[in-house]
Length: 108
Image (cartoon, rainbow, N blue to C red; front, side):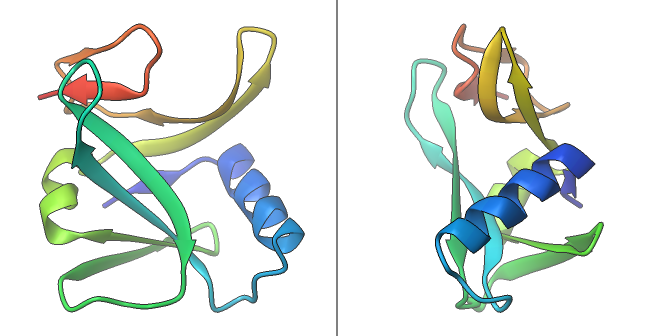
């Protein structure tokens, strides 16, 4: 399962509204090759399901990932920070053995 914090959910819903996307759009999260640690997170709004999608709903927010990405994202929490030390979404991933200093890529 993939989790989302209350703050991340609120920010995602705000962004969806600002982009004038309907309630049929959900948050798609995935893992792609790249970044200085080898793997990077990808996140976007989508409204099309794929055959291998894994669908989770938490706090009223639908989160979707592909089966391959789920292997890397299992039990990950999507968080959002608006503090002085950085602003934006980030992934609290218990499966990551190392991350780069910017936090945008990881390795398992």
